[in-house]
Length: 242
Image 1 (cartoon, rainbow, N blue to C red):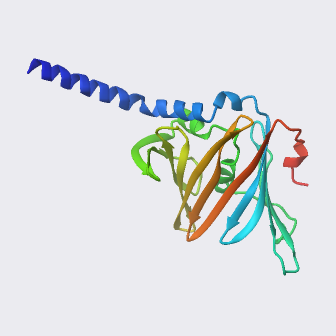
Image 2: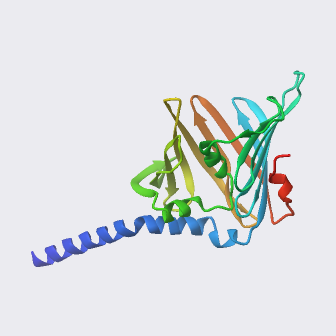
């Protein structure tokens, strides 16, 4: 009986210890998986790829410059229509964000905090989870299977108007994000955006998913990354509104 009691206490102690350390260990595992130490040596990065939205294909190019400047260009060639190639540009100069849509005219439209939060996820130089962890905005909500593989489920409570909550799923074996859920509220309506990340690879010290599939309100967006270039010359004018 005494031996059984000691064994039970040991199990309880082990479980409570793991529970208290689990979130920290997950963040540490994720930081190692994305090679956080190498990211510190990358000052600029350019990613090129393709995106498909409801059967419409477009090219996408992302530019990021340390610490937080961002430019995303999406081009779509609408054949048979008079306006031809259309381009949407998202710019963040480090303080303010803008959207320019050639179909709506050249006038930049300021981004909302909610939009900016979404686009900042494209900045591969940021360790977003570590920032949330340091700000005590993450809780561990158990685990779930993502495409047959066990994953930690993390809930993030961002201080951003319009975004109710964010869930990140970290693969238990690889330490990489394989799924995310973003719940937003627009005009009294709650919208859930669900993304699946796959085909992780490393190019020039950057670890990223080559494929991301996002669905929201019946719309599916497939994004494929083909090339990554790092530490290339990148003028600050690229991130300014002309």
